[in-house]
Length: 455
Image (cartoon, rainbow, N blue to C red; front, side, top):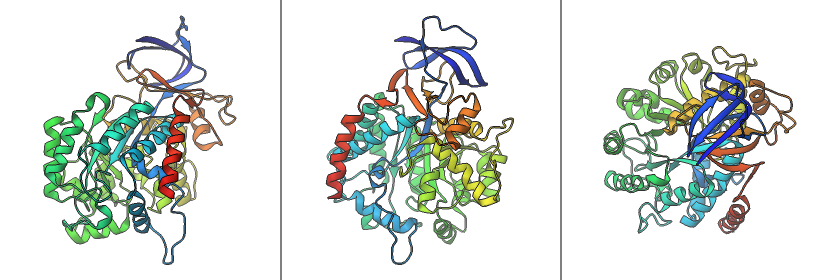
């Protein structure tokens, strides 16, 4: 299918341009011409920008939002939240998993995400036994992405241990567990479904959950399929994790990875919240992506990423929804900046080189890092890139009469309620005038699922 879209204003690789004609063949952009005439093309109803990649998702946790905001008797933190999460997931069936993921992915699309990396670790049934089809839960994620129309990078998670040093898993982790052989077989099975998946990679859960020998073995097996496939891992999210890693290895988590795991541009270190100066510098230098999940990190009380120093070294980063207490890329970017303002008691902290606009710089950087983390050819409006486009809603009060980068500043830091009007993924419109064709059906199914899970 050949189509053309005319934008009165569009963000291209080298900045904003007026009167841009975008030609699309199938799922790819084939040509971009600024200063053009509409020439019979469809005319976008607002400014056109690249869709945002979401680099870290645990889809099933969308159904938990609002269920853990109750104070416990001895103080709450990530670890007490994790115990509640373990109890919640015990009842989730494959059908539930698909219903929750479909609802989430539609919400993502309506908010301006056009692709997602699913950090998928819910592998086994409620008793901890493998399904007859070991890839049952992964295939439900794929089915949800197809129904919603979002670009998926699926990252099956290797999880074998409760903590550092190969400690046996606990009962709450029984639905996650694999050994090297069963995990590699799962990866083989998922690669067979590539026709419905934009990209396949792997996710060793964390240094708590994988031994060095296991990490080496699963990466080597992935390389048999694709030596450029993305690899994601949780790292240094919590201070306890840092302390436990030091006790185990005499190294901090990010330092251990940099010293032992050949970290390069295919890697995404999710969170990387607690790094010292040396780790911050080295992670930025190695071209890996820091996967920030600001709303979840704030919700869990994880801490604040050392963004000023990391940005100064021009480190790559992107944003993820993680537990999905927030499903809005503009909100995530606001939290990245606001956390630094609260910490330093100053304003406009994270300025990008050559840009005055804080919002414009944050959006561009998150696009580039997110695209790299997902291993997808997205994040820029240019020939040979996938046609993942967002049309901004300039009738939203917060965006009215803004142009160029002030659109980003208004959408991120202003009171925008519905900054996105239309969304295209791979040349197909999936959101029109703020609505997704499957949203009512998906919500009815999601609501029934939630009613059962909460009963």
